[in-house]
Image 1: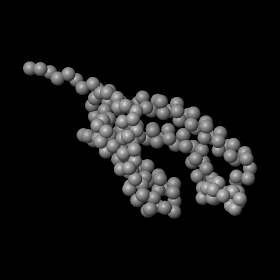
Image 2 (image 1 turned 120 degrees about the horizontal axis):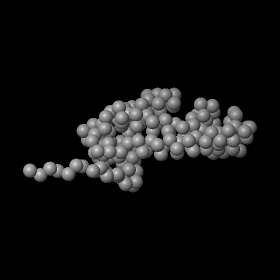
Image 3 (image 1 turned 180 degrees about the vertical axis):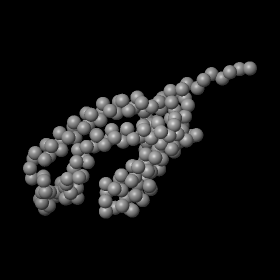
Image 4 (image 1 turned 135 degrees about the vertical axis):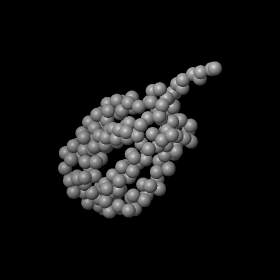
Length: 171
């Protein structure tokens, strides 16, 4: 009787992961459109609901018997632990939540801007500054400097957390 060699997980290459991510974005586009349409007056609410649904479905995909999102299945790789076994839903959800927190840290400057300024007024001003008035709060250059400081500091913190996060799961 021959005993099969244990499965040794191999890491998926960078471009395979990027391709899977792009395919998953295409897969999630209709869902994002639905949440945006249903909650369009409140962009932060629609994005929050979409992120919650995406986190839960990603955790379900990772912990399912297929161990992969649709994009990962097309690119022929899956998520597993260091021994090649399927990961639990709790671990997959924890991984997704910590990654989302990392992205929120990275985007702290943008989140600050979304909560304090009218993006439509800023966009209109940037498109045609001769016609549109300076948006409220942008007259003072210190506001722009504050935004840039928050953005760069949060980006640095994000990279530290992202390294820790990326090492926390075997893909």
